[in-house]
Length: 366
Image (cartoon, rainbow, N blue to C red; front, side, top):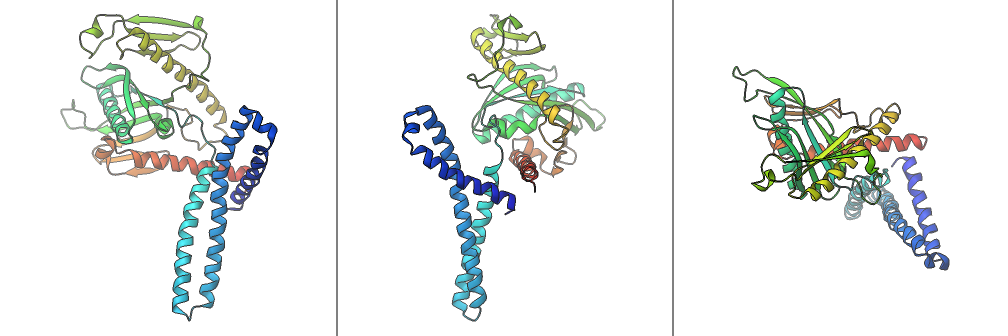
């Protein structure tokens, strides 16, 4: 383990002692707000400190077993016991090392939140809209595999199938943390269904993943800055959807950001969902602007908010998916399009973790 990580972990052990002292004080125990705050920190710190203590213990066990092996090479039984201990300690140390590194990484408070996935057809006309439909299917099936709930909040179907634009809400455990790296330009190379001469076309869609805002801490929007329009929804939904002005479109006048929802039957429900999407888009605009300012210092950060960059290519003739940010190429495109996206998601998360760890090392002076 690198020296700077050992220094960080030693601080956790020191802090655990401080917290245990503070939590034993009478004045702290009487202040329920402060007591709960310190208790939560104690739980987090103790989790790291306990693993660090176990890591150090297994390091000592490993050293002792290696010493035993060096002096008992002539005794087969002793050597076997020593080697068994070496193997067990080495495996556990490796596992604890990975866990501790992960626990030291800075946490994005939005990672645990639900998310909105916005897919928009780009260059490529009808083929782009068809690909937007394929991406919606891919994400929907991936979410189903993860046990997450999905619902389409609004859509704009194209004439030949697919979507000009579609917004999907995803609800579940750590949704945003898994999907946030999907934001960006997605390029597809394939022979379109409308192509009569078998030529491969290239088209593109853009995907934006937004964290669903926490209503308790969401940004405050002045009602005077909003224009709310109601209209008759179109598309599937039976007779009711075409009989009432239940669809809602909300425009934030200062920024020009628009959100709409037509999926629900009631105007009130659609307005509430549209407000959530609008708030998420405004927060994402703020997030993107902050990321742009930090981009010079953190050039390698993925998910920086720049949605114009091509992040991924889906090459159907070769059955190949390539994520250009991390140089990942997988030759299982058809299964990925059916929702087998976990390997890609985990590779992107691992890349971010490596970047964060490198930043920690620089911050600690190497």
